[in-house]
Length: 357
Image 1 (cartoon, rainbow, N blue to C red):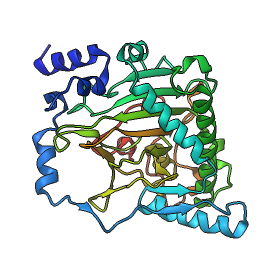
Image 2: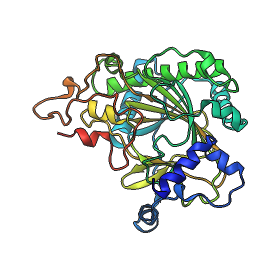
Image 3: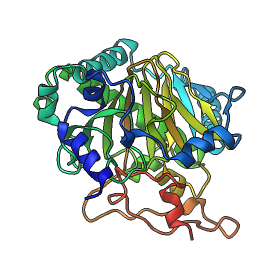
Image 4: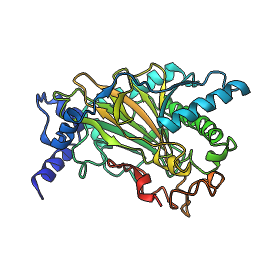
């Protein structure tokens, strides 16, 4: 076992996460969190400056029930999905009171006594519905992520026993949030279907809205934020991702070869196209790289909802949607299954690159 692996295992074995480190009063970060020199120099020297001029599209869902307004929303969403792969939605009918309670519950969980959190600590996200851990890719990432995560999985069953949830997180609030986030996801899938020139229920009928996972992230204040990342650059192995941000920013989207900040917009959800939807749309929609910076102030708190797709047995085979294929627009991707890729991420391109014809 090499030195780095020993250091990673020692950190993992504490079962207290990054917050446990911060609580010891550290003034410098352990080297397992330090980004490789080439990554640091890329940000400093390769003109990959953060764009202050670009702004993520903001789409107002108010009036979606009116045919004329829905048509406008579909066009806005189509443009954002083609050119950005990211957008924010407002007036989505998820009450602010609920989102605030959800953020507060995530904070309470992560800031409770370590001994209580340890009961949920595990790296087995495949077989457990509720898991507390640090980086999912801790042992093979180039640097460990500066964050802790409570993961709630509905990938294999849409039923969640409230007693499986931590007591400190209001169980009724969490279940209501998940229900409404899934409903919002289905609404957006309907709009995306129309943006592709299909019937509103097309993507949902393919199972894209199934297999939901909720990740409740906690990014503690970092004493050396320039050396670490809350989340390294990656594209999402999902069909669609919804993100609720706390008031502290850090999310960046790679747009036209520049990192663009996505400041928190109170009450909004950030939405991004995942790799699987890029492949289904035959590159009509784009799944793009993004990352989360570490921050000297904190904690930053976020709740992310991934729509991973159907993992029913026998495994569903996905491919570019036939209605989008023609002699002028031939399929760009091979057939694929989602199960083996859910919960992973790719730093050099996305999963879509592996299925290019």
